[in-house]
Length: 196
Image 1 (cartoon, one colour):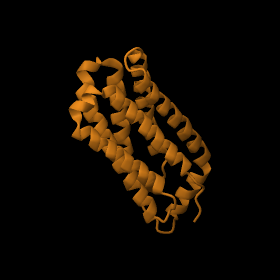
Image 2 (cartoon, helix red, strand yellow):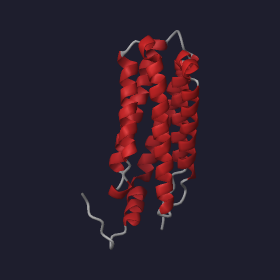
Image 3 (cartoon, one colour):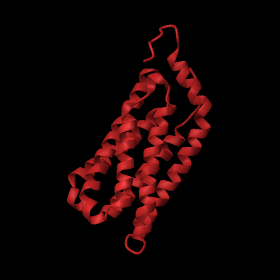
Image 4 (cartoon, one colour):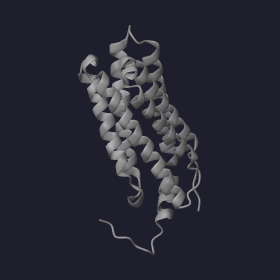
């Protein structure tokens, strides 16, 4: 455990770390967003003919999102780490593994609910992190808040229409990938050099 030192400027530590890694993180966000949107579009456009290939690509994309959450957690400075990222990463990886190894007829409903809860966790984490950054007077948190709200809206739709969602799992997966990719793209656009 790291003890709190009132003489140390933790906000400046976060700003310095952010400014050093911002370009790499932004590039990774843009690439990940493009891959997710492409996987989502392919999942929606080719639902039957190439379902197996798209299923594996979508599973890989969901696993990449999980790995991204672990990387985001480890790259945060100590006082800004958020345990929700670990939970979200685990759920993403579990969904990806389920898509890879289980027949889709067994996992349709389970994956629908897991995606809904995953979106709730991710949305809540993003909104919570944005409010924590605002508390420390770090600007430009609107895109993070917007991304969190977008995730929660999609989760509510999944929960309110689970059977319709289960029947349209392919399109739900496509929507999840496209919206997650769009949210990452919006976050990447909102990444600016921070100053105090």
